[in-house]
Amino acid sequence: MTAKFSDTIVEAFTDGACLGNPGPGGWAALLRYKGVEKWLSGSEAETTNNRMEMMAAIATLEALKRPSSVHLTTDSQYVKQGIELWVPRWRANGWRTADKKPVKNQDLWERLVAACAPHRVEWKWTRGHSGHVENEQVDQRARAAAEAAREMKV
Image 1 (tube, rainbow, N blue to C red):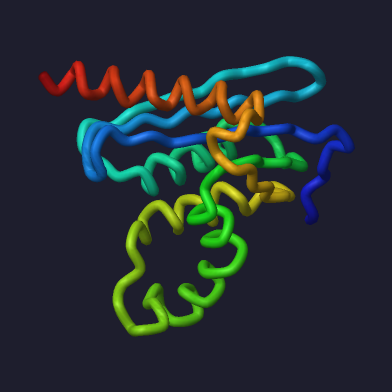
Image 2 (cartoon, rainbow, N blue to C red; image 1 turned 180 degrees about the vertical axis):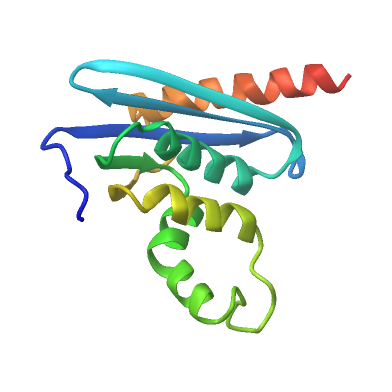
């Protein structure tokens, strides 16, 4: 049985932030479907920027209730290149890099692969802090989540 995809595209915009790397981190996502917007965000007390970028994408895809066509915009080349180019090689090599070292963040890469599976995802990249309206909005919310994580640590 093949998944039936809606003709309507879910637009998603994601970002992660970290206060120190590692340090307190936050992520945020904006989902838009048929003119309706939904915000998601979260944080961790001790993490890295790359992990927060990945969590934003994972949470976005996991939030979708049925197979969807998704245009996911990120300012993270790590996430975009990772899912499109590196993951297939890593999986074929037993989650080892070209120099035979374990892949960093394997737990989240596997979770992202699983989150992508029911959907048709088109990955889009935008330069961060370049005036892209939705990217600026998710950046602000990701930073606020990271600040909240820092406050909880004190």
